[in-house]
Image (tube, rainbow, N blue to C red; front, side, top):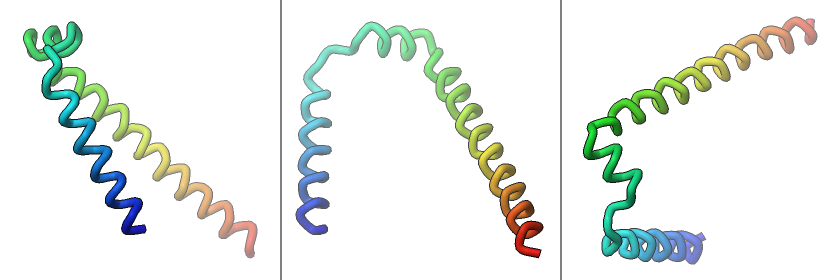
Length: 71
């Protein structure tokens, strides 16, 4: 487990070091330059929240169904 943690840490630091030298890409400069990144983050947050709520409600329904089957 310790070796896996160390390997993961080393891989993450090498990936972040590689990304610092590159010039900003088209997508990055467009979204940050026009202020649209906030809209993208909001849309992604709403989608993830919706999926989470849907999974929570499905879990509750399944629990109720399992409880009814055990009776």
